[in-house]
Image (cartoon, rainbow, N blue to C red; front, side, top):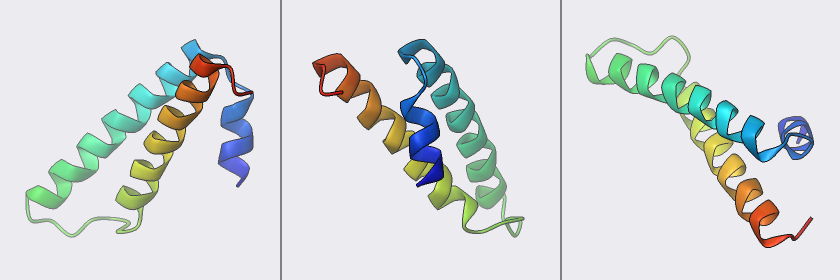
Length: 67
């Protein structure tokens, strides 16, 4: 819940920046798994995917003026 509250306070530009960071991190983790190496933290991929989804949801809410 902490991350959601933190993300709600950001502007759309900052959310796009954070989303780019999360997607870059997700790409690195995916390459690590695809190369056959054991991931350093297996739950990290799921967490990063959820964070990207949270940001996309918040961007849609801000676009529609829900908040």
